[in-house]
View 1 (spheres, one colour):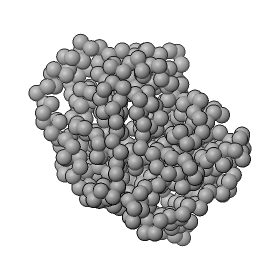
View 2 (cartoon, one colour):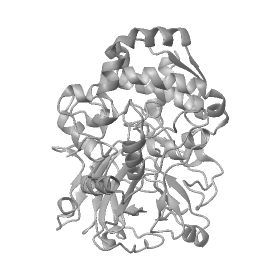
View 3 (cartoon, rainbow, N blue to C red):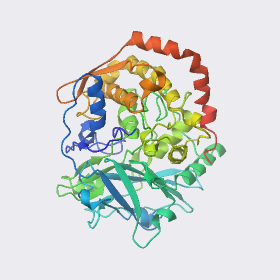
View 4 (tube, rainbow, N blue to C red):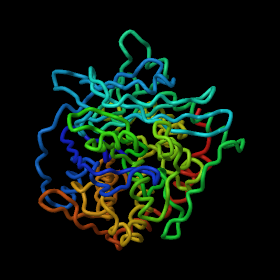
Length: 472
C-alpha cells in the first residue's frame, strides 16, 4: 500500500513517541501502535476532500527524495551487517537523515536454507552517509548455500538505490529499483525472484511448510496481504522493519539487547500494508502473522514481507488481489506500464501479466467494492475497538480502514473506471483526522448487483490457479 500509509509526495509528517512496538510476542510489549506511524498527508487530503471539508494545509517538509547506497556483497553475511547509507538524491533539495521519520528508509532480508527449507529474517541497518551506527549491526550466521533476498521500504516519496562508489553492488545483488530509471517510489528489491523460486519449489516438494492463515473472528479466513479487504491502491509495498534511534539521531537495530543498553532510543517504523496486516488487522480479528527467527535478535520471531507474500500465494482464497496496472508505483510518467508492473510483481512473488487485461485496474476496483466495505461493516465493532495505526489519520482501526478505502478509490480513479460513486464516506475533524465512517449499504447493494454480470469473469481472472502460475 503505499499508504505509507499511501504513496505520498511532499507533505509527509511522522509522529515518533518513545514507546516500544513490535510484531511478535518474543519482542518488546506494544503500548501504543500509533506511536511509530507517520501521518499520510495525501491520504488525509483525499479523505477530507471526499468528506466535503478542506484538508489542513500541509506542514513544511524536508527533502522527500533520497538515495540509499547499497554495500558491497550485499547478499553476504558481511554485506547484511554493513549499514546502508542514506543521502540526498539532489543535495540542492536539502539533506536526508535516517532519524527524520519523513525520510527514513528501511531494509529487510530473508534467508532461505536450501538444505532444510527454513527461512530466517535479518533487518540490515540504515544510517546517514558518513555517520556510524550507535551499535554495530550483528553479523549473522548464514547457512551453507543460502539464498538471500532484500527488500526496501521508504517513508518519503522516491527512494533511489545506488552502488557503493567503485563497486557494482546493485548489479551484483540483482537489485531492481524500477524500470529504465523510473523508480517505483517506496519499494525496491534485490534477488527476490531467486529467493521466491527456491521457496516455492521447497513448498512444492514439502520441504517448506506454509502455515494456514486460520479462521478470523468473523468466521472467514484470516486476511492476507492479497485479500481485497486489506489492499489499497498500491498493495505489497514497504516493510514491517523497525529500528531504534537515539536522542542524538544515531541508529541501531531493533533488538532486546540494544534497547536494554540504550533505553533512551525509541522505535522508528515504516508504515506499510505488511505492518497494517501483521500488527493491526490480524490481532483485531483474532489472527496471527507468519513469523520467522530474527538473526539479529536471538530468540525473537518477526513478521516479514516475504513471509506475507508466500503465505498469501498459497493460502489466499479467490479472488486474489495482485498489483494492478494503475498502482501509482508502477506508472511511468502517469501512464500504464506493463513492464514496470511486472517488475514490481516479480519482487512480491506474483505472476507477471501477459497483457493489460491481466493487470486491469477496473477489475481491481470492482473486487474492492465487492469485498472491502462489507467486511469492514461486519467487523465494525472489533475494528472500532482496536487502536488506530496512525492517530494523525484516524481515531480507530475502523475509521483508518475507511479513510484508506476512500483514498484508494480516488487515487486509482475507481469512480471513473467502474462508473460508480464511492459508497464509503468519512467524517474528519478540523485536524483532518477521520473520526466517523459510514457505508451506504443501499448504494453498495445496488453497485454489487450491477456488477454481478461481470463477477464470474472477474473471479476467474483473479483465480487461485492464475495467481499460482509461474512468475518466471
